[in-house]
Image (cartoon, rainbow, N blue to C red; front, side, top):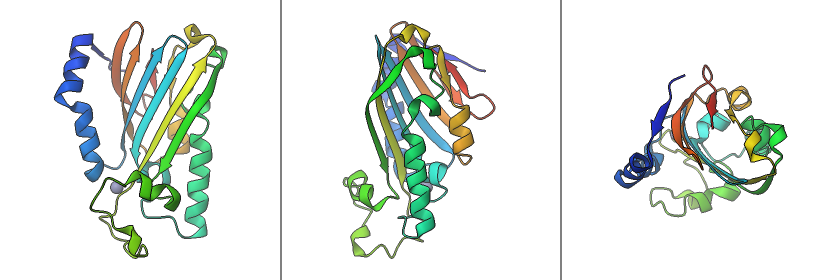
Length: 195
Ligand SMILES: [Zn+2]
């Protein structure tokens, strides 16, 4: 796989010039199949943040109203609730999830919160725009894990992620550890990223 090693100054420049800020902006016009994954390991604390179009995780982005849609949301929430399995973290590293936050824009309960800062969503009017092709929503997942043997963490393996979410085509990953930074595209054909 192709690896892009970034120096600390390059990463700082990247952050400053807004490659990540651009990802945020593009949330308004995201590209289906393409998500972002930021991972940081500091001592025994592992932080994982993922942002993807709702279509990648659920297959749709409108507010879930039918029982089928709601079941899909529930299933996604359950799958996303197990980051150790989903991201292929070594069990020997003894990572326990101490914090997790999963926002699914298509879930009515999450929707208002995740789009609270957007003016172009007016779902308060009874959601009759749910079939509108312009109606996009995202899935955000944020985890903090505490690992008893972080040295056993050798990398990420997103085989299970791509198996669970076949609409996901790639995650643009950035990795920050005590020993440096790395990044790359994680795809079903190349699902691993070494720490
Ligand atoms: Zn979309």
